[in-house]
Length: 134
Image (cartoon, rainbow, N blue to C red):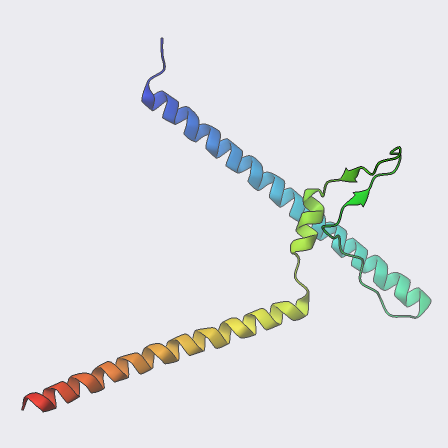
């Protein structure tokens, strides 16, 4: 027997939910691993800097450039970026976070000022119209 339209829709929506949950789990796992790695790396850098007496250098961030894979003959094989490397690329340094929130606040204030000015102009226009009628 051929499945009904409702059954096909139910299967399709179930499949979509499962795929969505799978993507969410993969993303959360990648982010948690990245956070753990970066926290551990920061601690290790601080310890080594204290030992050496110099300042802690930031760990190199991954790039979107292709990386050579060892053990290839002649040609160059490239290795794809994993979810952890992609999550590291998405991290924003602390100074940029402050700048982003400052800019967002300024934009919000400009928007509210523009709205207030617009309503004041509407009120002035209505008063002018009322004055012209009398």
